[in-house]
Image 1 (cartoon, one colour):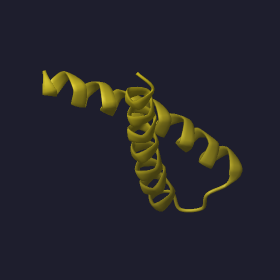
Image 2 (image 1 turned 90 degrees about the vertical axis):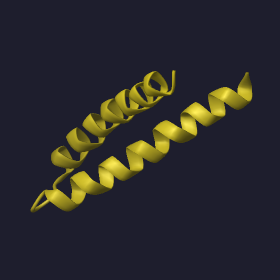
Image 3 (image 1 turned 60 degrees about the vertical axis):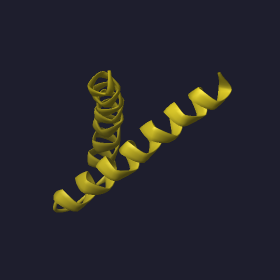
Length: 58
């Protein structure tokens, strides 16, 4: 059980890091608010990506 949770957290973290990096590269002049909004949006997208991957695997 704990192993599955650790894998889920690691997957969401990997998605989040990649999406946040892409967001940071795409904005011209990052300030604190843009980085915070981008990180929040990337977290939601990472959660959705994990769900989509799990749904496709079934």
